[in-house]
Image (cartoon, rainbow, N blue to C red; front, side, top):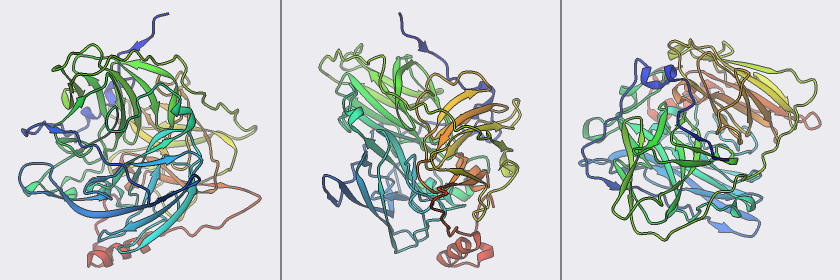
Length: 501
């Protein structure tokens, strides 16, 4: 039977961000092509057969994006973005979180199943300037492409814009056996997709660019590289793509409609490859694709595009023929039955601009909005109440778990949504059902991942609880955060600029 190849972006076209009143089109800067930056792997401080020890440092720096002055940036063990962190399923992991920034930050492990709220690293786990916090957890999930980013409410968007985001790769014995490229930097390539606006002297000015529906810039960055190219030296290349933008969606395709296979999503490898020529990513989603460049000759060039804008040119070099094919089945995905007699948890994603909310409420750091028992398998129903005529796709993210997408408006999910996910784009007027299970206790946030929307209050909290071992949590409050920012910035608390609040 011939394989199915999908040639559309799946999402509703009237909801594309290109229709937003504040849409910022990408413009390719007139600079010489640059070799795609491949972030180095973060080396452990110490490693044993059972334990890994790391230090992750948030730091200030300067980065050369464009000719002229360097841009003031933040990063993790790097000038901008960060070194790629690799974890192994089953290992005990110990991390020192070091803050060398002039203000407080947090370290959120987006996509990791770790205890909340402190280890998870949302707004309740600030690390103050000059301080180091320590966390310990056991990696307990399949191989996947996840990420680390700042999450200090309500300054998440500002700090991510400055550069606080980096890729986190989980490896396991199952993925090791699959016929997938995995030589990091050669045929296994991280690609963090972002956009930025450059102001006078090539500097970022987040406040000048602020838009409550999501900040965008005219310049695309891939791993922090402007106008990148990548030299292809193997026939098959695996791209681990992260939409690390504050707002922008990416509609990806090659300039000659080269076919590729998606083999992974947020939570790991898909049950089967999905063949396509186009894929759309909403904020915070990850897609792993395998591209076969076998039909090209040395000297050829093929370009990865978003809409009509080139993102990265793949320059074909000599490579050995590779007749490896992907199997029809990759991995098994757990399919647990929902826990009996649990009501469906109904969540509405409401509004746009400054009026965003979940279930009609703005986020309150001290409020627990829902509770779910550890081990229960619950159905959540996510409805985007935006108008189908002028609404927007809201990417819905849950901390501390990977879920499965069950249906869209009662019908089938998109073909590349049969794996584990932690973020799902919900079209205007659409209802998406997901199946959620928490394996660890904690307080976890769930929110829209247009970062300005979460900062603006489109966020809520759920406690995952064990009735046999009840816990009490100290939850951060807004006054404490505001006072800390005020002291760090040398202003009065009432003068602290907190966009969206």
